[in-house]
Length: 89
Image (cartoon, rainbow, N blue to C red; front, side):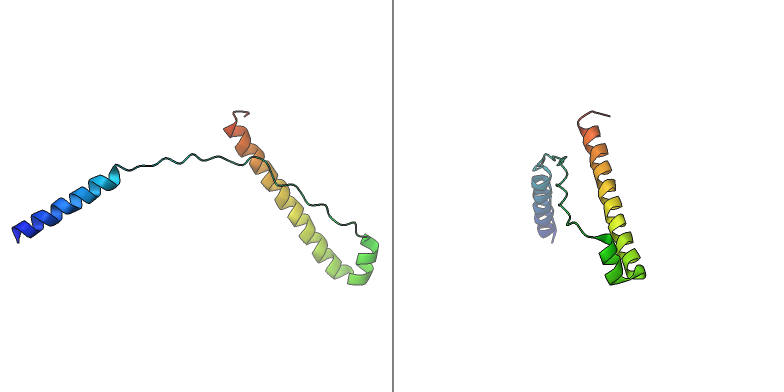
């Protein structure tokens, strides 16, 4: 029983030492170039409003404004992260 315990302990120590000595460092590069914004189609707002009605038009308008706000927020976040990485701040 003591021999078995000693062998298991030795095997576990070998595995532990082997796993601790293989540390790999992976460089992390931040992509600081935002993706290009797509070209949006030109839509006649009056015509869209007439076909959708006021309530539905306001829902879509609010959604589009929230998308632009999110895009602006992500752009500002990239600017802050890339500025601190490049030492600009």
